[in-house]
Image (tube, rainbow, N blue to C red; front, side, top):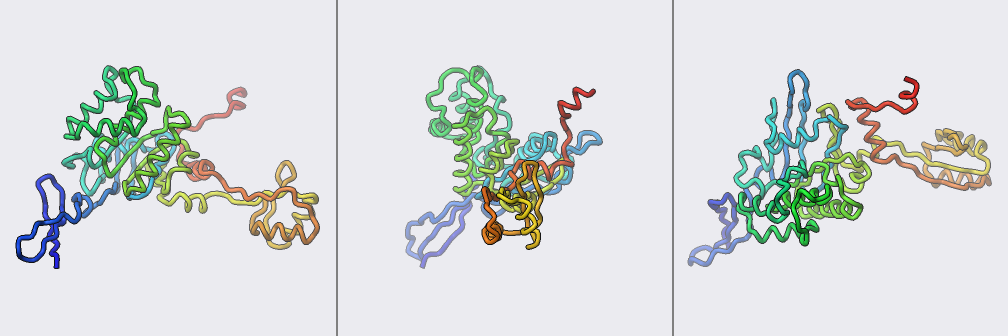
Length: 349
């Protein structure tokens, strides 16, 4: 009968070892766990986080948890406090109050931070005179990461054959290099601030696939972006903030269902007659500018059946749902600090 023994090793790793009773049989490593798996495993935990610049609260009592196994989109208007929050998580800015923990500890207390948390906050924060390989080699040496890992992440990010100095890189190439640096320590937590900036369509597809694959491996992925269409394809969960405060912390599908409008667009041969018929069955029907009907309160198949029974020809019957962008605009409308004027107003003034 094997006996399970938990053994703490000097490098901060907890290993579970099985030994047979008596006889001095050779020990067998059953599993290896980082201490973070016991407390705050691969999670980012924000508790009542506040950051003030003078009287102004940039982040105001923010609390949420980013969990492993899913891509969490971190959304908010310009000036909402997203970048400041990410900087506090990484210990780059000190909070006025509250805590930001990764794997159950403050970032500055992690023994091997790059092996636990990888981050891309500013793709341009690279010495312009270095090559991509030299840049990663410096980071690897400072964090005791094997040089072989450099080739792995360069290949993973499509930079394996890249030559020349980083100063001559396009923004998209710098973004790829930033992602390579974030992945260098093979961390369980990834934090990416606007990672699709400067990427071409192939690059956007690549980073989307990469984030989903990393989450599928059980990693924690937090990504901020202003591209709502991309977040709709990538994020499993959303944390939305405005003016430094939490607005929503919800699965993406639930957010769309609860905050967006869904109706049925109907074009018919006798629209007014169909409108009266549908309203008599409890539907709410609005007439759009081109004469089409916007129907709510009935299922699509019922609308079709009622039209067929009345011998009303239906030319189009389409279920319409608001996009993530429309739902985001609706929920953050009161939290926008920078609102542009219209061209018409500019001309009038």
